[in-house]
Image 1 (cartoon, rainbow, N blue to C red):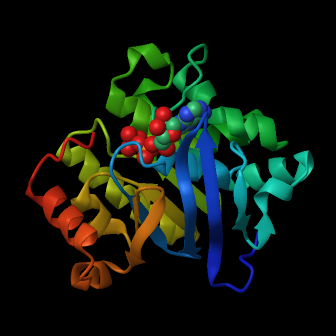
Image 2: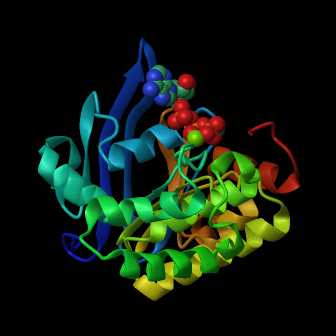
Length: 256
Ligand SMILES: Nc1ncnc2c1ncn2[C@@H]1O[C@H](COP(=O)(O)OP(=O)(O)OP(=O)(O)O)[C@@H](O)[C@H]1O
Ligand SMILES: [Mg+2]
């Protein structure tokens, strides 16, 4: 999965999506640079998760296009979609672990589904990933026996097992304490560097955004109101950008 010209891994063009008369995305256009971390920020309910779901073909646009590595996702056939998902690691907002499987089997699942690796090789990979997120002691635990933060880290380990070129994280930091958030941000950065992958992180936490984001995209009212490097956004004269940056820094905006 090579990005089209080495420049953008994901291109979103004039994306429209509504549900039962509720227009959520109203012409979103943005680009995700390859080999970097992009952060998508915006108030709760603006459609950040909806946007991310279009990237892996879990939702289809009413209008507009989403291209990954130059290929239009809504136009992929089933086989191509499977191939795309093999190359994309997605951490859902709630961790989305299978409740009937223990932690080990949850993390091993993508390897068993998408590769022909032996159980011995799978064990090596799974244990390495679990060690990276500090969960090697919890392998036999069931999801309901894990804390919210542990579930998040487990989802993170699972998103990484196939060494994906594109990593999508939907609020990896929500429900985590500040120390864990900082550790997770470091981990995202480390992994991104190690595999030279492209990362997209959705977050409400302005500190983690500025810490890990090479490129920042600001969503509001169904549109991209601003995007650029953190320096560019800090210099931006757009009132929403300033309010958002300052507001989020100063304290709770009631956006959780
Ligand atoms: N499958 C769906 N069917 C109907 N409405 C949906 C669906 N998915 C999302 N929505 C609606 O789309 C809007 C945007 O939802 P989304 O989950 O993308 O918000 P968000 O920006 O991720 O918010 P948060 O920061 O709280 O996670 C919401 O009004 C939500 O109710
Ligand atoms: Mg969301």
